[in-house]
Figure 1 (cartoon, rainbow, N blue to C red):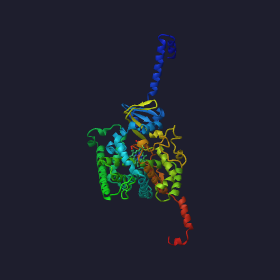
Figure 2: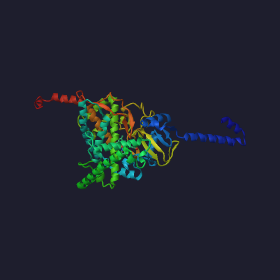
Figure 3: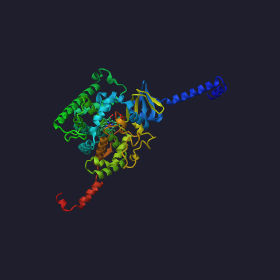
Figure 4: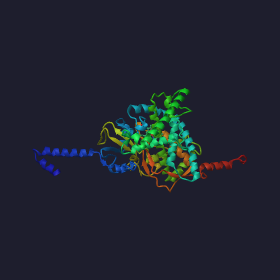
Length: 520
Ligand code: HEM
């Protein structure tokens, strides 16, 4: 167009305005094109059958930090940039709701904290967060140790039999036992037995995952719950879990009436230190349905996530024996054979870094879901109200622009061990293991301590050797990242003869007076 514009510009009457108009039009086209968000078109079959964050990563490398992904009439905005994530989660959090997530989880969490929005969310967050106070978390750390020791009977049986066991399943049961006690003082004891309540919890969890990955929300069709066997089983499982929760709520209400204890902000009962007890003792006036929604939400949020973190940490460690040995040196020195207390965490710095790095490589959940309630802009791009957004934490955590060798396990990447524990603030929203902003996880400390206790105590006692006869460990998604076929490991008792603790014990024995042996 330049020669045309030059020619027209020479024409004094008509040419100059026309040339200016053409130039304006060109500028307009260019700026409109720049405002148009990159658009990836997909065939739904490309995503079904593989974990959704894997194709999203490939598309991120092609289309960049923000793009629209459309499947027929459905479209999603995919976010893979720390400053955009910060805008959604923190600065403009008011403009977003949980959207699709609330719709998917409604059947099981109702208006619990994860799916809730608006005033209900505000009120429930204000009521629940104080229950996880410092004294509560400290008392839970003791329980984590007890549960981990209790689970060793299962591992000892595996040592004797020589058969490999699925550590993903093991961690899932350990985390269920822990969260049951922590949230409503219920002993699932799923590590050593199975019962209808445990089965029902798993049926409900699998249904939540099924619904979050199914392409069609067929369960909303009237009558489906009565006809489709899977949905009938789900209704029955919900009834069992709800009955169990109602029973626990009633029992706890009676306890609160009987004990007549004074409530304060660090309220903790020796008989029942659960979150449910705190909520009831606080005089929180809520319906049984809301209370059940809150308990179910914490049961699910605190169970699958921690189990997945432990599973993938052990998987990563199975490929990095040098890191396993470094953890053991730390644990031998700090703990020996005793269970950890809260004070020990400051000393278990390397073990913490290993978990931090495993959570970078395998974030749980790998994608955060939001819906825009109002228009919002990201640089030149407009995201209109009503848009569904996925913040791909997987993409953030593996972005080559943000991390050196992003696919490599490098716990040292977060800096010196005496520095701060990495989180969304220290890493400026490039690292979101527990989300960020006002909807950040309320159980972050609890969960990190839980993973630390289990990992430290188990690595101190056992060798975990990959079962090479099983297929390689692959990934599949539900709400968290699961393995495709389990994490099968042979369990051996660790050879302690070379450890510092064993050496110091040998020295004590050698230095002991001879008469000590007369009674030994
Ligand atoms: C929220 C991760 C353990 C309760 C979240 C979010 C993440 C997360 C990423 C933010 C979700 C979003 O913004 O959409 C994890 C991980 C855990 C863990 C990786 C384990 C390693 C727990 C535990 C509890 C818990 C143990 C309960 C005791 C919650 C709740 C929310 C939440 C209630 C919703 C908070 C709100 O929306 O106000 N979690 N979580 N989580 N988590 Fe956790």
